[in-house]
Length: 403
Image 1: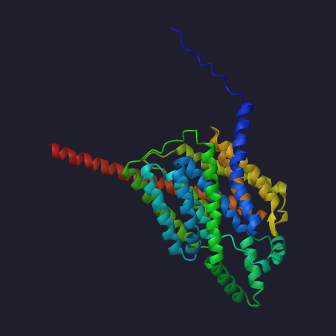
Image 2 (image 1 turned 60 degrees about the horizontal axis):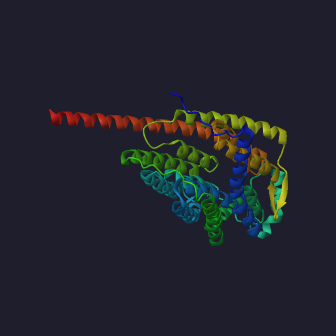
Image 3 (image 1 turned 90 degrees about the vertical axis):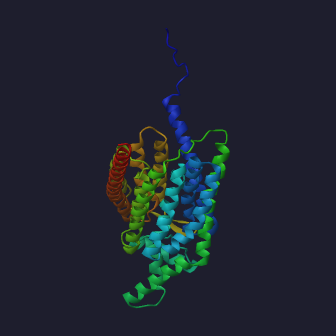
């Protein structure tokens, strides 16, 4: 009996790379273009929240379909101003994070937790450190302050507001900064635009990707047993709620968003731990940190260029964007460890205003992965142990009944 050989021609490696590169550039454009357009319209750096919204919408559509994509975009946009206000207090921040992860846990029953997971991950950023809404009168001071002192944009805004208050003492300046940041989080105009940024950023890729993929069968969500969904929900609620309380209560610890992302990405529904994923993420992050240090040594320092009147470290963002495209390409390849190496410089450079800030973000990401992975493994161990004890108890009860 002769075996039938597969005569389907295999695509050349170069063609595969070109195809993945095209897909990566298209996806990256979906993320960047809405944010760029809103930045030009508003001349506000907080328009970059649209990029977070784009990722939320795209992943929701790919994991759950059009209806889930639209609903997730709307929910994320409406929760965004609540996240900014909740960040004023550790308890309100922790409660909102628990409510968001409760939603993710509930959706795990229907296999939709991956579609909604990015909502608490990305809303942790504005909760912990909102991108400011810049008063026009202070834009002139920002470029000098950022360039000379190597501060983030939020710190520069705080210094500009403090210097303009006329206060002489450091305590007076600290009070002014505190009130300025509280006023920022409660400003109606700012909060309204945040809703717009997140919703526009999210709905654009949802609509466009649905049109492009309308003839393709997307993966069907796989429901999970109630017992496994409950264990998953308890794990993510407890870990992220405690983490959010801690990071809001310790504002100098700026790595909270990466930490919460690590917990939600690594925690799985069920009793099997994907050790390979955990190991690849931690080792890949370490390799990415080494690459980031080498990059910073080559780049030297950030070069600020005015973009729609706002000083931006354009060279950091260009290099970060290149790594971002590479990370998307690697995400579609069988070598996931390359993705974890590339995503660390991407996250650090696209979220930094100075070279020192990029270095800090890279180191924080490594620590977050180590500590977060350890906590997830401990929680999984407790869950597995409790599940086995419950199963043993059930078997004993059944044996007693039958005897």
